[in-house]
Image (cartoon, rainbow, N blue to C red; front, top):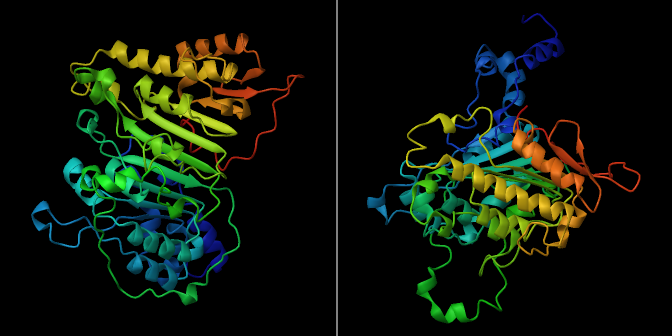
Length: 439
């Protein structure tokens, strides 16, 4: 093998490359092992000798997952807290000339005790530290997709926004996924040689004070600009995915329909109170993908139906994917009326389809007036392929649509058509396959 020309050896190693989990699993149930590779063949090949390692490393580091050190235990509250120092990783990438190979980059923050640790660390993250982090990362890497997998409270801190956690215990959602993507790279704006990658760590301390800490500041919130979230605008992202996991646990609780899930939708769409009253979604985003397993219809209607941003393509999935067997777990479904799950799913889709075919006309039955539905050209329902009820529901709305829509084959994609019945030209989305249901 070592006598082969290097170009042929490189080609042989390419045959060991399978699809990266970050390419096709982001719509599945969020977990700390979601992106574990199913095969180690390429990693084993990189350990044969220096020649093989030299060819394997650029392939291995196309998809990078970074797990910062976990925070100290609760007994060490005097400690600096969460370590968000990317210097060792960045030094390795630059030292091996791998920074230009990184196509996807995933930041995974995990804790042993999700609810307690995540809430504590969220209040320890300072916006100034995050700006330093994003600047350092994006000065070295230039990924086509940037993903954060973290507990809801920690994700809110990364976005520099607040999160309603009063009902979080009833949902018990350990992780959310936020993923940003684009189809191509722009010219680099910073020189890597100018970076100071010295070994340094920085802790994160309390970000915004609790609401009760400063009543005088609250009086001025109406006139204050919302704090920025730099990593959303450091690149011209065109596609975004938000995966909020499963809400099934909440269906076990009393007064279910009065509860609110821990969600960053209000922050992304700018529908909440300060600082969530200014939308975070960049204007460059034309492709929105929302995944949640049996979310409450009131949550979907109140956020996405009434406040859908201006998009070209909108993808939703409200049921478990083909690799998720949560509906076969008796413990998960204990004290749950399964009929409620499907009723909430169907109610949410019915209102979406109503707004799609009759924007602003109350087609959803809730008196919505969101004109952004008029600019939507592609609406994809992830479960439409294998769900006859949704398929029939979609066809019923399409048949009575005032504006022209059609079902594109049997793929679950609803497309707006012109007066002649031709699909309207859609802006090119980054990669719809990984952000759609796996099929």
